[in-house]
Length: 328
Image (cartoon, rainbow, N blue to C red; front, side):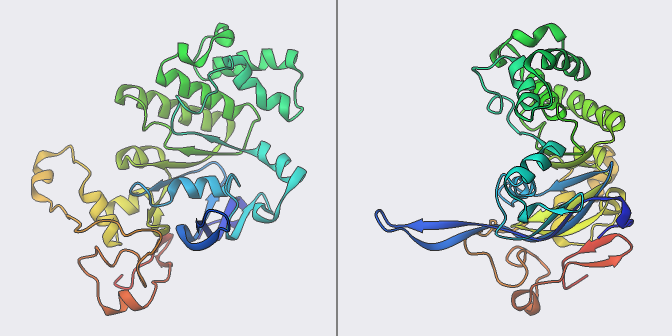
């Protein structure tokens, strides 16, 4: 699923994450499972940004958290810098975590309100034994400067900052251990539109400076097109299409991708008036009991008998353009 195997930082193969549904007060019994992520595979190249898009509840955030082993996978492989994280435990996994970090969605909930900014950013350095508390003070000031905040803010608490400033603090914390991979879990969705561009520009500048690799999870298709090199489209726990951003936006092949892109406003009023909007019928099925065959078939205007009977293979239909659809 990639061009140059020597340049692969992260390789995800057949990743599955099911959350058990338990019933019973005294003796609990599993009566089902939430199929949050179901057989997801992709490669992530060093220095690139892979955008992951889809509707709410489709498994984007769970995919990111499972890659970082915040959720342990039900099955599958997460090979990071040559090691399978799914089989790594204890101290070895703890050391690997220095090389991968996460920027969380909500800057109001992801920072401990009882800790100062200096303590929040310096904590990873102290926990991993990289710096003493005294050494961490200077490093925290440097990190604050890198993300565009005043180094004198180290003794302030999160409630004294705006949403955009808090997210910059979260970025500084993610950078503290000098990771190679950062999972950005909708880092701009809770911010004002005027602040979103500033945070995205900051992430792009940091990527160039430190050769960072991003898995960028978002709803905003326009922002994904701006920041990503490649885009993966997710629906109900599976990736339905993966391609270069320009190829995907110019030639979407999967019916779900076509429907998503038809909802993005165009700046040209003539083109906007001429194009046909694709309205999907019905609701997203429950991940507890997903449809047989193709996950999208219950809402797809082109679905046929085979779509209900056989799960489509995720295959390369043109150079570096992957899609899971019987009709492509």
